[in-house]
Image 1 (cartoon, rainbow, N blue to C red):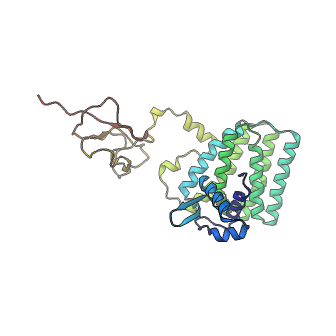
Image 2: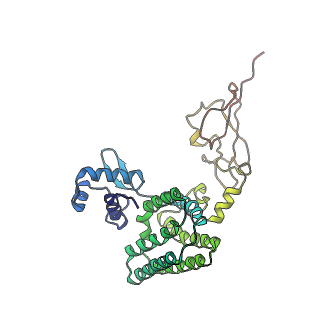
Image 3: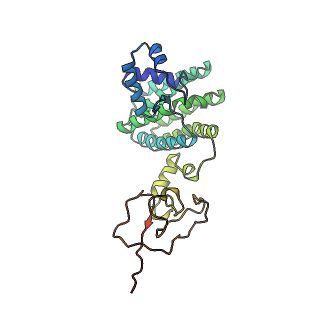
Length: 309
């Protein structure tokens, strides 16, 4: 969490649903509710905007960030990478630290029995970050903390169902057993499974009509390892044909040929059948030593015209 108590107080209003995703932040009402002046309140709002928790629109002020299914998939993919590396580098806890982790899980179990969703969210968060703090990767930990805070308002959706709430302490019990066995691979696999349940539900709730590039993002340590070990030259992912909108406006329509392909399972952005073929045009431009500086995901080849004899 942030060190500023006022930032924490506003964040708590967001996490507990007092301020919901997409809702405009009424600075006067928040100032009166928290009994603070407007100047420090504006500083706190700017800090939350910098973390991505709030958005700011000119002439409209601040609002709670509203995430789409595409946003959440990207955040969960980032979490997969960060949390895998953090758990991979943890120092095994002392008996006192392990007992504290078990106590936090009992807090989760009590919250489940009482149907106290907010207490469960808080205890679940502390359970995971207690484990994360055993790692020396503090920068990754801070970024993980920020991403959790951005998506916290949506976590209540996952835990609104009683059956899903009941699974949380059981998942934690399995993680504690893996820690006692000092089995880091098992711990990472259990963490992936625990995280995937909420990811799948939230993306289904917020929308499933997503492009293949998002659906292919790694969401587990196993998928992440496969993605990182695949040679760059063996995949056409990230290459675009000349029909892609990202090329529009960068060059004239004449004389630019792109050597790019789409994976067989993907569609051309313009609906053309471009898989496994090259698209060129006959008109040529003067050859240059280096291609123009454009997005690294786009491979552009510029060729020279034939000289007239």
